[in-house]
Amino acid sequence: MRLLQDHALFQTRDLDEARERVAAVFCPHRLEADGALDACHHHLPGHDLSLNYIEYGARTLIAPGELGRFYLLQVPLSGGAEIVNGAARYVSTPGQAAILNPHLPTRMTWEAGTRQVLVQVSRAAMEAQLAALLGPSERPLTFDGPLDLTKGPGAALRRLILWLVAETDAGSPPIGRGLMARQIESTILAGLLEAPHDRQSALSRQRAAPRPRHLRLAEGFIEAHLDQPITLEEVAQAAGISPRGLQMVFRQHRGTTPLGFWRDQRLARAHADLLQAPPGTRVTDVALRWGFTHFGRFSEVYRARYGLSPRDTLQARIGAGM
Image 1 (spheres, rainbow, N blue to C red):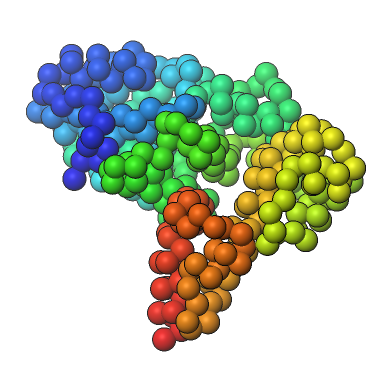
Image 2 (cartoon, rainbow, N blue to C red):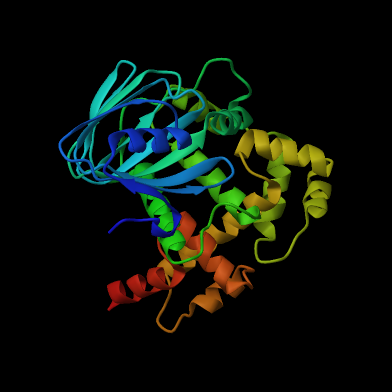
């Protein structure tokens, strides 16, 4: 089944048309097919990234050189691709994704029958996400080789991306417009920073560094009020810092906002409760316990974080108990 069907750009058997239409979204490239081409491209644009579904049918050589303005995550659904990105050479399969660096020359050969979901990420946005954690740098972020999709952060990122695709195909595109869409995009970028890259050691040191006093006080206040509505001004007052200063501290050390941290902690507590729920527990009980009064939105952000719905988590717990 072809994904993102409502966002189709083209379907063609003409090689030149396929090259030109794909280049309009990505970048100019060399395209050669070994066999009968049956190409399609479906495209959902967001603010800092886009979701794409592409297949060519035949075995296909794609040589764009340097991508320039974007990173590209390629998640094969079937088939596979031989990847060359700078000095890195590997095979991308449904078990491991390719992450293409924009500043290194790229050359790919897709096997016949390969179907892929591609996440095109703005280079500027990716670098801004990293700078918020480590400070600005003139050295480009460089991902190392393939991303394991079978476990750990890679598996979580794959689930999130396929959820975005599924929601889009259900008629509710989760990216494009709105505050939640921007937060979802930020989560994708954060997930990419969990992949192997040349700044991982610096990120690990930053995460292990002692927390500033204002951050410790703010996090302590938030932890003590997870089940209550709070405001940025209340957190800032408890931390002894201005609201703007508190925002900057959280951006620098946590990569989020104070209220984003508050929401994420409540979500984690709700997840833990669902995993340990006794018989008779309802999802609404858990959501209300941690201050989520909009159940549809709670389900959306929960699924985006954990890859399944709160109800599925609860049913799995009940099933395991039985």
